[in-house]
Length: 123
Image (cartoon, rainbow, N blue to C red; front, side, top):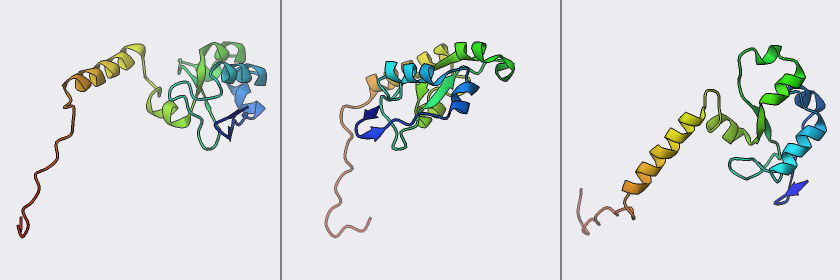
């Protein structure tokens, strides 16, 4: 699959198996997302997407068929670590959105420019 001229990199079989997936499962996730990160809707310059999963207790001890149940989708490294990292919950994500909306409502429409200095002024 090619998106915006960048090839989507298929992960190694060992990587997908770690999450209880097959290469076909991974490809189905990639196809469902249009071959891009679910959050930013872009493909990185490396063409790699991370398999995002919920960090449930004892995840590493779960058999592959159960690990697969906690796979959320495919994300670029930045979105995986910045926006959907460990500990994010729906409640926290909603609070972040509310925080940004509140700021957007009170933000000035334009950024004021500093006053111009008079010629010859030494301040």
